Amino acid sequence: MPTPAPAPATTVTGAPLPVVALPQGELLTVNDKDLPLIKDALGPGVHFKPLRLDLENGEWVVLATFAPGASIPMHYHTGAVDAWTMSGSWNYIEYPDQPQTAGSYLYEPGASVHTLTTPASNTEDTVVLFRISGANVNFNEDGTFHSVLDAALVRHLTDTLSEAQGVGPVNYIGGGAADFTVKQGG
Image 1 (cartoon, rainbow, N blue to C red):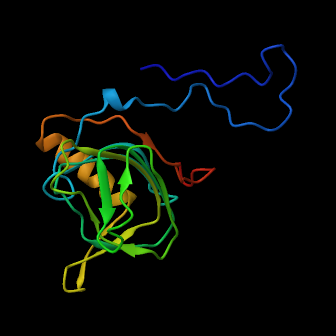
Image 2: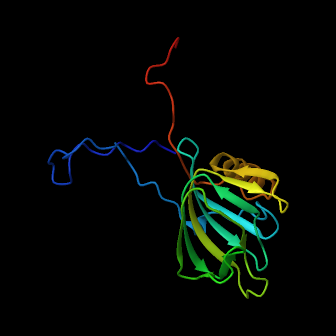
Image 3: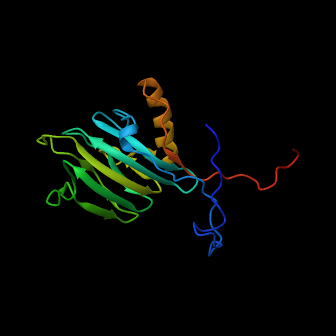
């Protein structure tokens, strides 16, 4: 694939750009219809499509799909979460009277703790778009440490499970590219 040309240093009319701008030669865009569903990645019935995984900034955007009755462990958020429910319904066990249904937007501040579950009575999969800053620190039912889920682990799961499931490689948007501005000894 050829490297795209950097964006011109002028507007479409030829005027100089009004600010110093990122030389972006193409839009960073993916279509979820072109991405495979990484199945059972976070437990039985918990699938996802990675949209953006930025390891350097600790941000991850995934389109999660939950089968009826699926759940994820209790977890503590180290950063904020935005969640848009696109279909189905889900709730936090700690807030049973506040179900999230198609069209719901939920903001979770950092340091929130909860346990996500989908009702077994759901007649369809639940699909939620999550934008997560930081990590989920996951706990077992008895409150002991289970695992940490962050952009790095989601990338690892994407790479290993997509290969094992025969659907890879997956074309998601990555994060920055930390590097030296001048290479030493080269």
